[in-house]
Length: 405
Image (tube, rainbow, N blue to C red; front, side, top):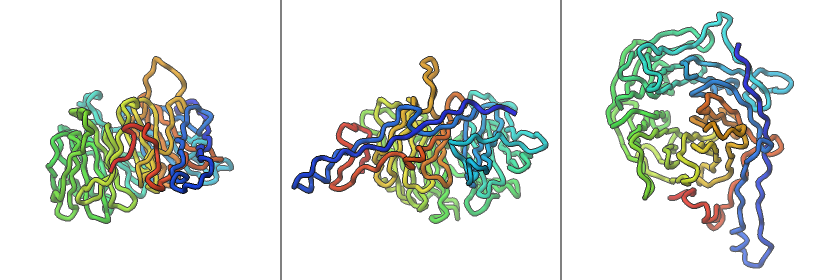
């Protein structure tokens, strides 16, 4: 069994809120200076490193992380319940164990007749953590999470699957985003494509269901969002993301989508911005543009309570935004969780939020490592929310890194 990589423990200081001296003018008091929490050292938060991953997801129970490595093998890291971890849930304070069934079988995706360089790894976990649907450029595989056995494989490329999502009400229905820009609605039970959705110009990079609105939202490398009814599978709306003035949209940019807990508001993640839309009409509520210095946004996700948004960047940094306002609350530098090595350019490719701990997230890095990060126990959360009285918030020096209505 592979050994765990080095474990780094790190800590978080309380954010400082500098209040101006008391003066008579109440409006000035309300516009007090707010200081962003900056985390630059390993002593300022808690971090745990796991090796060898390309994609990752927490199990819905929160007791394990499932990772998909570049060699198409899945690894399941499980936390045990013990004196140091009474809940048995994922924690940066306790090392997990690499779990395998007694048979020793591995969950390995089909990679025959595929070019690893072109493969887009993707997977989805069923709601009850019983099944994982996965692909690494070849056929799609359905695995049993208890036995790791392959239940079935289907849809040999081309086109290859690039994103997978289980229907929220029926585990037998899968939405499959494809390399050729189509979306196939597939019924596993009868091994049949129910319908094919066409509306994007480039490969599908994101899919999200809303069981409240009965819609599927898709996003593509064409920077477009589409809304599909899950009753008749008809397109209800579509919209291209608004690229900031003066910036050139890349020809291929992964756009991800995720529904807020309310199942109405939608988080859209693009390398230039974070945007919040209201479904099903796709009315843009807020946008937050990255600063040039941080490099492109690589991924982002809501926290489990949808109160925060964790955003990762190509320079290795991670920021925490207050979801309702898209205002910066905390910035975590790569130096807080990565050992210094100027010759290696390592940064997060994917960020996953713990399903029940609102301040814990995991980063999947370009070097195959996974880092679980959380604030110090003494702090409990990432930073302090900026004041909102009279519109006060981050100062003008935040540049493009601010929310816009």
